[in-house]
Amino acid sequence: QVQLVESGGGLVQAGGSLRLSCATSGRSGSRFGMGWFRQAPGKEREFVAQISSGGRSTDYTDSVKGRFTISRDNAKNTVYLQMNSLKPEDTAVYYCAARLPTTIRYDYWGQGTQVTVSS
Image (cartoon, rainbow, N blue to C red):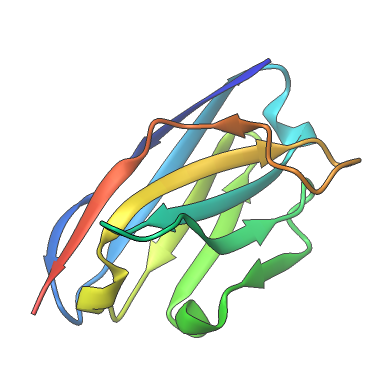
């Protein structure tokens, strides 16, 4: 079992930046592939970014490429999502998730952190 706790959300003006953090505990967090997802009001949860267990491979949804950066510090058991040039359409609850390297399914989820971008 692994526990995930997000932090760093808040209210920011369009064009601003935020950095989300996801602290992992329990089973060795460095073994897991990690991802960020988001869910806006009235919409389904969507994939935002993911990073491999070693941090060498990353992937992003098209709408955040060039603006968001996912990274991890395995020594601190923490994954980050640096969000720059934020837009009102980035407003959502952001969730951190973890998956075993042998699967593509994310089995572990955090409670979410709210990000609100004002225009």
